[in-house]
Each structure stands twice: as C-alpha cells, then as structure tokens.
Image (cartoon, rainbow, N blue to C red; front, side, top):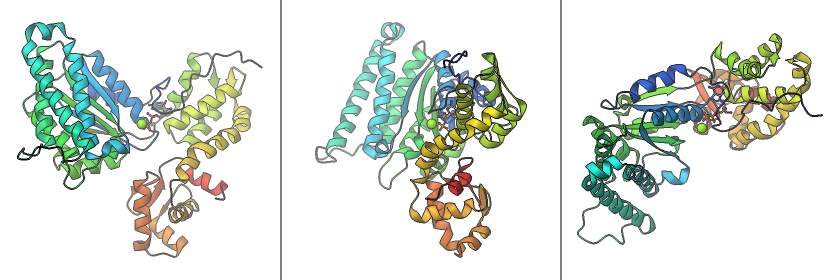
Length: 396
Ligand SMILES: Nc1ncnc2c1ncn2[C@@H]1O[C@H](COP(=O)(O)OP(=O)(O)O)[C@@H](O)[C@H]1O
Ligand SMILES: [Mg+2]
C-alpha cells in the first residue's frame, strides 16, 4: 500500500547530510571565526569514532569555507595513498587543482600573469618529479642531483599558491582531507611531517593556508608522532554522540517538519537504543517513518519494527565490524559483552583467566581497528552502541 506520507527524510549512510544537524553549532562557529581571519590561519582536526558525523561536519565547514571565498581542495585518503610516493603525488595533485582554479581568475591573469606562470611551471615540474618517483624509485634520477625533499618542495608550492590567493579574489587555500588516519610517517620517508612543517612555515608568514583534517582517533597520535608541535597547530574537535536535547531534536525534528510526530515513549526508547549515535538515529528514524502509517508513530510501531531494524544492523553494520577481528580478538570482545557494553580489565582477567599483560596486546589491536576504546582508565568499551548486545544474540 502506498504511503500517504512523503518519502523518509532520514539519511542513514556515509557522509550524507542529515535533515537536522544536531549538536554541531559550537564546532561550526569556531571554524567560521578562523575563516574570517586569513592573515592568522588556523588548522582544524576533526576526530571521533566511525559514524559520529565527522564527514558530515567536514562537508558543512567546507561549504562555509567556499561560501566565504576560500579555495577548497578535497580528498578522501585510502590506505594506498598513505604510501610515501603516493602521498607526495596526492598533495601535489591538489596543489595543481588549486592552481587551475586560480588560473581562471581574470584579476590574476591581468595583474600577476608572470607570478601565475611561475607557479604553474614550478608545480608542474614537481608533479612530474614525484610522478616519476612513483614508477621507478631513484633509478631515473640523474647522478649528482641532490635528492628532493618533500617538505621543501611543498613549502615552495604552498607559498606560491597562497601569494597568488592574496593577489586574487580568493581568501586562501584549504586542504580538506578525510579518512586521514591512514597516513602515518614511515622511517626514512617524509609524509605527514613534510605536510606539517611546510604548512607551519607558510602560516608563520601569515599566508592563508588552512588544513582541515579528519579521521578516526589514531590520527591524533599519528600527527603528534610525526611533529611534536602538531598539538599546537590544530584546533581539535573531538566529536561524540549527540548530547541531549540535540539527540532528540535530530530524531524528532525531521518528522515534525513533514507533519508527523513520535510518541514520547518511542523517543525515549530510541534514545536509549541509539545512545545518541548519529548513524543509528538516522537508521531508526528511517525505518519507523517508512514502516508505519499513522500521523503519530507509536509504541506498537516500534515494537513491530525493532526486530527488523536490529536484524538489518546485525547483517550489515555489526557483522562488518565483527569480521575485522581475529579469532583471539573476538573472544576478548565476547568476554566484554558478558558484562554489557563495557568491562573493566579486572573483569576481563576473571572472565578469561588471563593476566593483564596477555590481554593488553589484544586490546591494543582492537583499539587500532576502531572496535573498542578506553572510556576511562582500566575500562574497555565498544565503539558502537549495542555491539555487546549484538554479540550476545549472535553465536559466531
Ligand atoms: N550532527 C548530526 N545530526 C544528525 N545526524 C547526523 C549528524 N552527523 C552525522 N549524522 C548522520 O550520521 C551518519 C554518519 O555520518 P558520517 O559523517 O558519515 O560519520 P563519520 O564520518 O564520523 O563516520 C550519516 O547517516 C549522517 O547523516
Ligand atoms: Mg567519514
């Protein structure tokens, strides 16, 4: 039977803009302040567990940056881009993209044509150099030529671009990088440290370059390992689940705008199930909207639809996480689940009969995979709400 209601406004998914953006005004306001001040450039680091809405926030602040006249080049990193030559290539490609935008500026072509040409020549040469590196490491380099350093090359390229921005109608350049936790500094090969030191040098000259980086929590460690001053370079925004009353607003408001409401006890129960986790709020909203008919979505609707919601999450969301764990790691997660959604190290020792130093490596591996985290000292919790309950209802 066709529903009398419009299509669901809810948006479960990856980086998809939600109908109501809950609990992010603080973060957006902070970035607006930075964008108004291109002579004192700041960098933003957005971090948090999967599904808390990092990409959505990054997209919003990208839109703010573009609307206020910054050039934004964006990229989603994957493991293969973390490889040193690929990394150099990626960043230089982005510098090229920015240059292409600048070269369309009539003002620049009239007033600073030579500068523009010089930048195009420089960046073009660098791109070729690092491109060649990628296909054949070292062998093609002519003897006697000093090895290139990515930090120096980036600093030079960024300086050119930002000076052009200052002369053009643009405010500056933003590098917007998502999934950036995959990039780690490797011994003997510059990646992160080159990006940070080049950025820092350019910013010290009050040139308008801004990094907007986003990634899972290990990104913080990766950055500070590569340059100890990175803590001072970034305004870090650590995202978590939506806090009351914004969690309820994110759930209730999209329906209300289309003329439907949820019964109070339904809202309470959904808040308990989801813990304010943005992705689950979208999943619940979508299922309840689509699976019911009344103007008021009531408790019988939730009771009827909840098993379907859970089995969908089990087969997709939860299962996808579970299979990333090794047999060892799965056992430890099952031990945690015996105690609910989190457990203390002491409880885990008792449950497994293992000593602390036997448990810790497994915990570390699970943290690296983003499956568990330490909410406080000596306590281990699942990163996704209801994951413990999933393990209990799933035999293997
Ligand atoms: N502030 C928010 N309020 C409501 N829903 C949100 C919010 N942020 C994200 N979402 C929803 O949560 C889901 C995950 O968002 P996403 O940005 O992909 O998370 P992450 O990048 O942290 O993994 C999406 O379905 C999105 O629509
Ligand atoms: Mg994301």
